[in-house]
Length: 479
Ligand SMILES: Cc1cc2nc3c(=O)[nH]c(=O)nc-3n(C[C@H](O)[C@H](O)[C@H](O)COP(=O)(O)OP(=O)(O)OC[C@H]3O[C@@H](n4cnc5c(N)ncnc54)[C@H](O)[C@@H]3O)c2cc1C
Picture 1: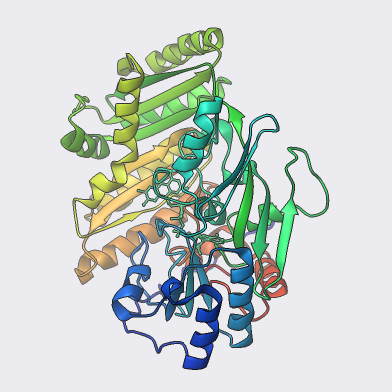
Picture 2 (picture 1 turned 30 degrees about the vertical axis):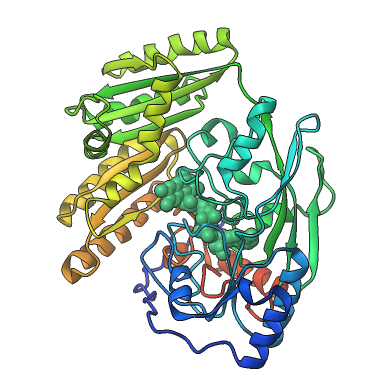
């Protein structure tokens, strides 16, 4: 392990850039339009404004938005951009919560919505080949008739794209058992800043030919290249799934039940923790009949063959009772189960209704530290006089503290920033990390020294320089 030399957190350098940047010079604009035609090139102010934001809090206008249809189009665009040192930022559905697709240095946004074809479904060889603009849920829909599925299931799966999922190495509730996006990317085609079209990996589940560059691109936030095709591993649907909704009188018991279940050798598909604030917010919106007095709750799912699930269920219920669970209720049928999951996936939207702004982070700690991290998050928010809801993919220690607030209220906002400085520092102190799935983007770059030493950060910078020497691709992000 490298020695982490702690450095003080720098002032937040990220500012909105609301002004409209200068248009792309006419001669360059003409060359770009020649590649994609006029209808796939936007540069009116009101059009550009639609691509200036994501689900984070910073906005910056691009100078042009282009909708290519092929890797060759993108290659030509990048050659021109490189020649003229124009920044290029990829964009899927813009659901990032960390500012990753914000063109903070303006330039061109390449939007992948026209590259949304499923190229091949091959369950015999267990893969699916897709273009980057395909929505995650469309992949699931294409696989379902074959009895297969693609495990990564971000809460945004009905809108976010495979390109965005790869660039953020997205996770989701069932990644506890099945792993994250990187574990399912067998190969890809990508375009580098130079315009070179490269391919990594293959259709083979086992492939150790050279560096695993597709993994390097996972989580790279579009800073190394633009993904134009992905070969994804798919898996057979389990025979059965069973879902429990469990409530507790206090959060300590809730969190301890999680680490006890994991520690006993059972690996559920998902273990989603919600505190009282979150539970009540969801109940206000969905009226599911959840226990409003419960201080903590768990949504637990297991899947597999029927007999194994039966045995695991007995062990899980024993552990829940040992940790003073108050109500343990199993979903009666698929519709009931789906209702609970829809409510859980809507938590972010439910919080977004509470205040003009919402900050949802995803610090991650070792599972054994989940109870302590929750205590610290609550105390930090209380000290700053802020409301906080804690929602967590608790089985893998991935926590989403969510603070509804008003960015235009300077005093409140200063307290929000202070609270998150302390939350990130607390996670680092407990052996945790900055992000389990949302990525670094603009939101967390300044916290990197809390969890990486300078030599490690420098290595990332050198990799970026080797692949994109002019810093054309998504500049201003974590490298
Ligand atoms: C309600 C809600 C729930 C969410 N739940 C989860 C969750 O459970 N788990 C999770 O991990 N995340 C979650 N997120 C965050 C977000 O949805 C994911 O990060 C998602 O992967 C982003 O995909 P996107 O298509 O919206 O990409 P965008 O937000 O458009 O872009 C994200 C990054 O990908 C880059 N990019 C996009 N396409 C390409 C490409 N083809 N090649 C190279 N780079 C590219 C962009 O430049 C940017 O850096 C949630 C967001 C919301 C709003």
